[in-house]
Length: 332
Image (cartoon, rainbow, N blue to C red; front, side):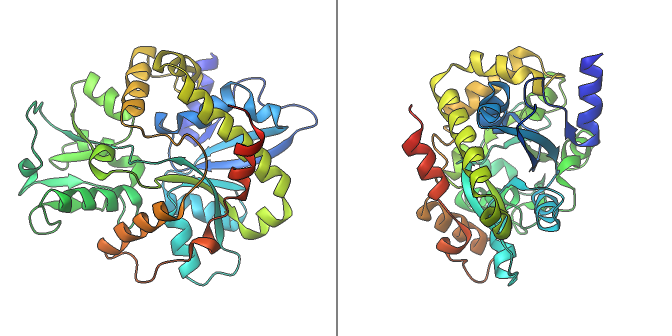
């Protein structure tokens, strides 16, 4: 019965957290994540191991299903904190919005998606994509821009050598692919492994391994929210850092066990495989600091994708003070 309730909540876009994540004397934080993925394991570990509870926080977790939707929820006050690509904060700042979103903690440092095809290709080469169609996600989103960056890196020009379909919403990409659209698709875990297990697709390459390090997903909030809730932001960052340390010091099998309540329709074996895959490609930050050189690389990728005319200043849209304080005060 509990599993059925959790599955229903996931469909509605709200995750009902396991018992112990709330209680009297706690501060409620409405967190909106860009998608529900094992890619964000340190966050679920922080929830499952009670690190948010230790900090006096109760997390209400919502699946925004896209960075643009997450940012809209944060700016409108429907959510307190967003988890998405830092590009969302760059766009908002460049629009001239006075109460723009500030990034205060980084979670992942590589693209977490995988290129999938309709058949197994043990000797896959990027040149095989020439003349093909890839479902790549929303134009201007980090997943789509990173894909274009990798394609160019491998000698393929999007729109000329290979078509990247940006018409499919992020949450509908897997369904579009299994429904016959496109030759290839990029998907996050555990969706990619579940499709492979069902024989509906085959993982061919890691986009993150090809792209190199990039600030892929980070936490942000409106400037006004941070100014009024400095203690909450610090406590939130502390919990995330504890989750990062825990994931870094534990095995994929141990990580998978903690993740199970958050992915009830995924068996432990797949969760272990996925956790091992992300660990091997060094996808997770070991601390929450978003460095200037990382943001510079992201903005370079955005410019190469023709999605950014002017770079946003690092010292305006990133505040590392909370991450640095967490690292100083929390023992490894």
